[in-house]
Length: 321
Picture 1 (cartoon, helix red, strand yellow):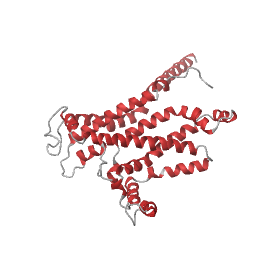
Picture 2 (cartoon, rainbow, N blue to C red; picture 1 turned 180 degrees about the vertical axis):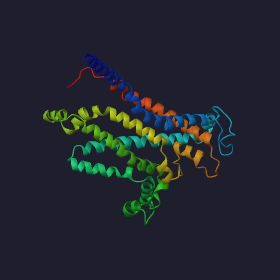
Picture 3 (cartoon, rainbow, N blue to C red; picture 1 turned 30 degrees about the vertical axis):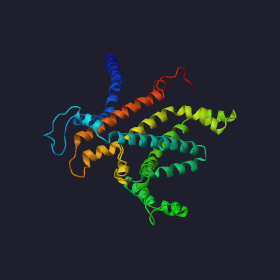
Picture 4 (cartoon, helix red, strand yellow; picture 1 turned 135 degrees about the vertical axis):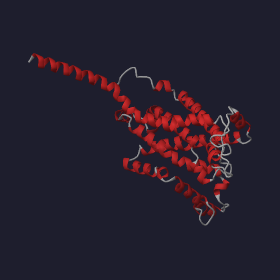
C-alpha cells in the first residue's frame, strides 16, 4: 500500500511538472505556422528585392550574367527626369485617398451608421462593402463605363448633357480624380469596419451616462468616441498608407499608367515585369520597390509619433472594474 501511494505521489508530481513545461512550449507550435508564412512570403522576398536592387539584373543579363553595381541604381533613379514627378504624384494620390476616403469617409460612415437604427446602419455598411468584394477588373470596368462618352457613359448622359457641358470620355480629362475615387471607394470599407467595431465596443454605461448628463450627439462624438479611437486610427492610417503605396491594380486596369497616372508602384511593375519591349529591368524595378518600403517605414514611424504610440501601449495605472 505504501509503495502504491508512493508511486501515485511520484506520478502526480511528474504530471504537475509536465503541465508546467507544456505551456512554455505550446506557444511555439501556435506561432510556428504564421512565422513560416512570414519568413517565406515576406522576409525572404524583401531580402531578395534588396539584393537585386544592387545589381543590373534584366532580361539581357539573365539570372546568371548580372553584375553587382552597388548603389548605382539608386543614383540613376535620382537622376531620372520623371522620378520626382512620379514621386509627387504618388504622395498626392496616397494623401488624398487616405484623408478623404480611407479615413475621413470611413469614419463619417461609421459615426452615422452607429447613431441610427441598427438594421438601417447594417444595411448601409453592407452596401459600402460592395466595391471591396467586387473583382478588381469588373469594378474598374464599371467606372470606365460610367465615365465613357455618350451614349454609354452614364455620368455624361445624366449630368453633363443636361447641363450643356462637354461630353467626352472623362477619364483622360480627369485621370487623377478617377484614380483617387476608384481606390477610395474600395479603401473606405476597410476603415468603416475597423471604426464601427471600435465604436460598438465602447462601454454602454459611458454612452448612456453622457446622454443622462445632457451631452449632445456631437459632444459625445468629440469627447467620448473620438478619444477612444486612437488605436483604430493608428492602425487604419498605417495599414492603408502602406496599402496605397504598394497597390497599382486599379490604376493599371483604369488607365494603364497613361495620362500621368503612373505612380511609383506601377512604375516598378512596368519596369520589372510589364515592359512593352520585353526588356524587363529587374534591378531598377527592385530599387523602386525598396524605396517604397523605406518610405512606408518612415511614414509608419511618423504616425506612431503623431498618435503617441508610447502612451497607447502603457499599462493603466488604475484598473477600472
